[in-house]
Figure (cartoon, rainbow, N blue to C red):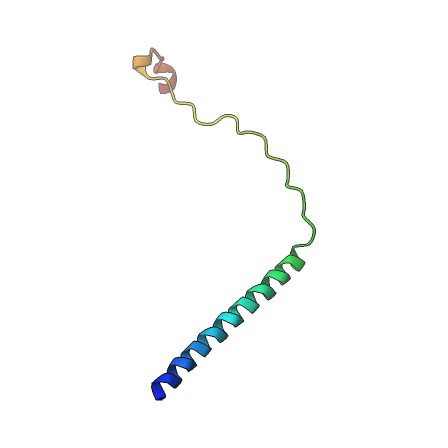
Length: 70
């Protein structure tokens, strides 16, 4: 009898936790929708990146290393 009562109590607790979790998720989702407000169009994309790393010429490439030594 005691074991059966504990099983029912455990099942009841699980149902209560699941129901509370579901209700809390709905409340949070509704608050999030209210807070979001109207949709704002996205900002324009920044210009593409130009420039960057340019490797120095190597001697085997026929580059002039003397210009870099000065």
